[in-house]
Each structure stands twice: as C-alpha cells, then as structure tokens.
Amino acid sequence: MRAVGSLVTGARSRLRALAVRVVKRTGLVPSDTPDLRGEDSRLGASALEADIVVFFGDTVDALYQLEHWYAAFRAVNKAHRIVVVVQDSRVAARVRRDAGLPVIVVARIATLDGLLCRSGVRVALYVAHSPRNFALLRFPSLAHVSLLHGDSDKTVSVSNQTKAYDFALVAGQAAIDRAGQNLPLFDTSRLLPVGRPNLDAEYLESAARPTPPVRPAGRPTVLYAPTWRDDRQVGHWQFDLDLRLDVARVAAALAPDQMLLVRAHHLVSGGLGDRPLPANVRDVSHV
Image 1 (spheres, rainbow, N blue to C red):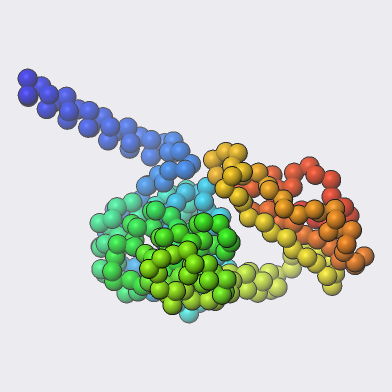
Image 2: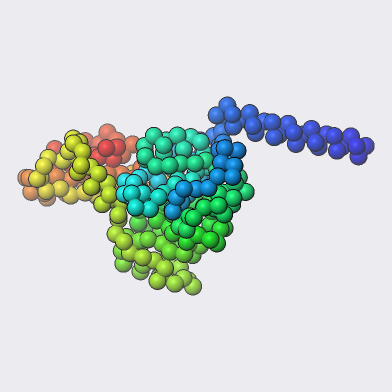
C-alpha cells in the first residue's frame, strides 16, 4: 500500500509540474501573476554588464510604477550602466519596447545569486513596496535604494517596508516628516530628499522632440493631480475618482488667460469620465 501511495503522490506531483509548464508556455498565466518564463538557461554562467540593477518583480498591471522612471533611467544609463531585472516575460516585452534599456527575465533565485556573484553590480533600485522585492533584498552585497513612483499621505508612503532598504529617495521634507511621525524605530537620515528627478528627465526628453502641446504655449496653467483613495475601490486595482475639488468653482475663479488641467491617478478608472467641463478645464488623465 505504501508503494502504491508513493506512486500516486509522484504521479500527482509530475502532473502538477506539467500543468504549470503548459500554463506558462501557452501564456495562460493570469495578468496579475508573474509568469516566471525566465531566461535562466540562457543566462547560464554569464555576468551582468551593469553597475545598477532595477528590480521589478510584478506584472504588467503594475508596470506604470516603472514607466514613471524610464526617462530618468535612460539619463543615468549614460554614465552608470543599468539592467532591468523582471520576473515576467510579458513585462520584459513591454520594457524592451518602451524603455530602451537592457532587460532580463530571471525566474529562479539561484540564477539571480549566480549573476550577482559574477558581476560588479553594487546598487539595486526599487520603484514600489512590492513584497516580491525581497527576492533581491536578501542579497547583502548590494546597496538597496527605494525610489517609489510618487509621494502622498496614503499609508503606502509610510510602509514599514521602508526599513528594509539602505536608503530611500524622497521628494522633500514632507516625506521625511511623515516617516518620522509614523515609523517607530526608523532612522530618517536614511531618507534622501532629491525632488522628482523622473519629472526633470521627462521634461528634458520632451523638450528635445516636437510633440503636440498639452496646453497653449504661454498660457498660465494649474495642474490638479489627485491620487486614488483606499475606500473607493471598484475592482482589481481600480478606484473611482474621489474629486475633492469643485471644478466649476475653480474654473470660474481663474483669470481669462488661465486654464486648469486635471490628471487622475493611473489606477482611477475613467478619469473624469463624461463629466461636462468648462472651456478652461481639460482632463489630461490619459495623455
């Protein structure tokens, strides 16, 4: 009976492994789960030709967090070589298409371990407080730096996971004060205020290429960019816009030559939707 039980257990394990391989190869992995279709066999005994690793273990659903930094990473890459390490082949395809940066897909920790041991990488960057970051955070040979992809008073901005990084780059003093008030036993000297260099890099890139203007040249403009709110969730990482602004009242208070741009967070479904807008207000949520 024990022999039969062992055969049954072994058959079930093999069938389960086969099912996993079939799901991966046919692209049927859910969009919110990394497909782990790694390039581990190709990477073999190779080394990373980079000084900095940008680690992104999540899926296309969260790719907007990384996209914010493409321009800044391209600028840094001119002086310090960057490689983007992901765990989803669908993410890799998008990053290769849009970022203009080297990308590899690593599925196994052993592969990542070998790559780091054979390479001169000394810095790892992270754009979100993803639990999957710990696949790389476990390596002590790197300086781990949190960038995040925005700054707000939401609880995620004072996540206890901040303590896991050697340093965190923040926009300014407000972020330092927020951490000091909400993170016990945390040394705020590990928070380095740098402004938002990703916006600077995007501006410099956009200034160098002809693009249709979001607003008429020379017209004074006010930007209102609210983030999502935890209590307005309507689906998987989708939130209703909680507009804490009387758009019509603001529009009426603007001078004739001024305009208001409203940009909802990526996770807010539909932006302003079908709301009627005054002539001097424009929804740029999807621009």
